[in-house]
Length: 125
Image (cartoon, rainbow, N blue to C red; front, side, top):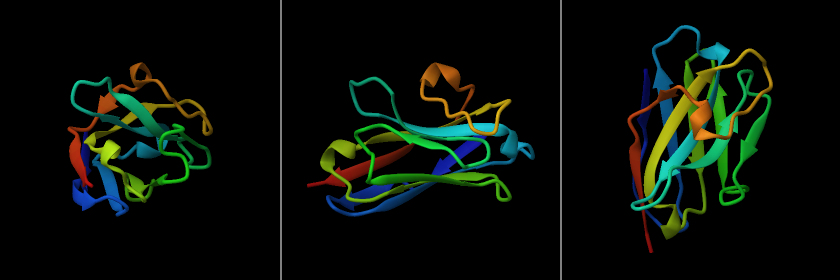
């Protein structure tokens, strides 16, 4: 089970850090990712990270502004969001799936089996 936190209201240009925690003891066996869904839009991939944390991948819309990281000892994956824009307003979801390789990053929402409950990020102009 994944639990996302850290959302809130921030002004444009500001920063937020989202965290996703799991109580599972085998989190190091899971690749992870962050997605978001704005009202009336499809859920979109933002960032993914491999089991080891050594490989990451970002959507063009957030590249250079968002950073995904993980701490396998603490069973957490985080998303640091900088230079936020009003169009970043959405519900943000963390996701995870077992991965047989250390370096694979998954970018499709259909590839993830476990989802957090979502945390709302609102960016005001």
